Image (cartoon, rainbow, N blue to C red; front, side, top):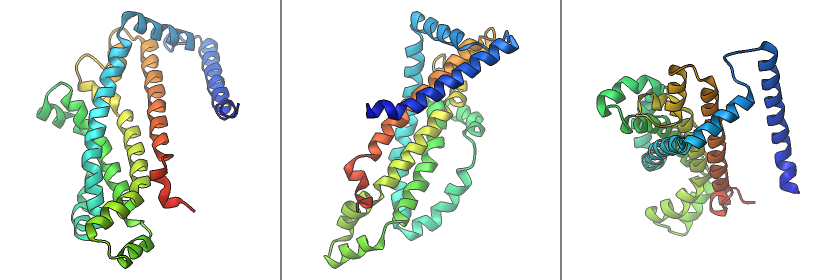
Length: 252
């Protein structure tokens, strides 16, 4: 019963938005923008054709590959920058220069370097994910309470052991937050990234539906599917934040 009460406000808000959407389309008599029913029917068509899961799977593969690569590089690099002052001084200006550049601006170079295929979208998604991961991880190291370091020094803990058993566990909450932000950004740019992909993916579905006959019901269906999938991915990341190992730094 408690879980129902938690999700009830969200369900009510979603139902209200759908009702307003439906009323606006009917009131304006739009022949372009679809009603919620038309979007649901478009989704059902994709399911019957067997293409929906192919598009979702292709997008998840590209986002997953780019995101995991960003984590594999961004977390160690962020830990190094946070722990070694010289590394931070040297690399942080470069990170701050590259971080604001939109992944869309990299599309011509991505095509030049990797061609038209899966590698180009994965590269773009990697770029969108790696910098938030680096910044959040380095910031997490910088905000570690000095009493943890001092306590370890008092017990004569070696630098390697200090890093593995104190620094990394203490910075895990920030790492998880960085991963959550990075995954959200990665999923956000999937449409732009898949503009140069092969004939698959939710981004390709949206662009192709717009270009091939103005199928705005499929366009909106793709948008809705991206939103729902993003919500599910965020829910998975939120579960990681609840792990006991992640929260020990904030224990009272």
